Image (cartoon, rainbow, N blue to C red; front, side):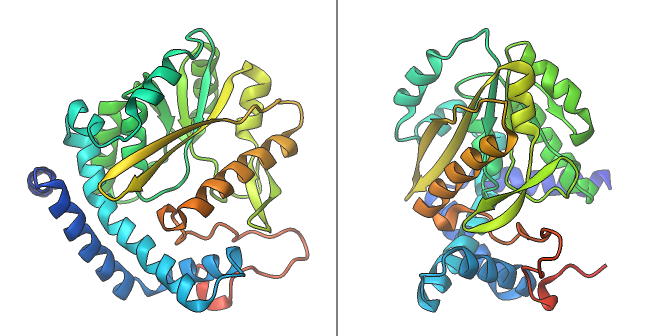
Length: 296
């Protein structure tokens, strides 16, 4: 296994050295392969898009769907750049780097910061970019495939202060209490425990209450940090969400609305292929048709 890991590591390292335009060209081709062969994920994404953008016709949905798979292919190279590229190389790709640098320099260094990130294909590049502005920690679950988990862990340990596992919520909370900046992705269905149903694109979606609990217990500031691809460059947004920590449902509505607005502006840069609406309120019919539900 070690030999295989080293071989894969070497190949990926070499790919990271390719010119950026060639990387995106190859990534788009890889995304086309994903689109053709990952039928179930493609149809989950198509269903989500139809449900979330009911006013769009089939051609519009298909265009977003294909572009979203192109982004998944491109994200492989964005991950490699997040792992191996120099700070200066990444800074040169950010259109508004100085603006965000000035904004983050004014944040209270004594106050904890919760940086919410969306489940985009290039989430590891998002993490790397946040680390250019401040020292960050994050939360991530282990991957079932060991070689992938080892690669992701090595990458994330390189660019973060610490990676917390989902069962280490108390450590995550303590880190924010101590004035640290921590990353968290709230936009997946993590199950009924510690979640409530909140509207997302006009549909009830189980949304984890953890961000509201953190505000209640630490009085931290909460921001939505987004990275949007603009041809061969990126534009960053840091949006203050002003959560109160006293009303979880109200806080979660603010989070979902902010994410929704960002997704509407760049719908191809969102990971539509996961079952965001898999769990339903009691008595409500399944959101997905039977052939798109996970087989147990």
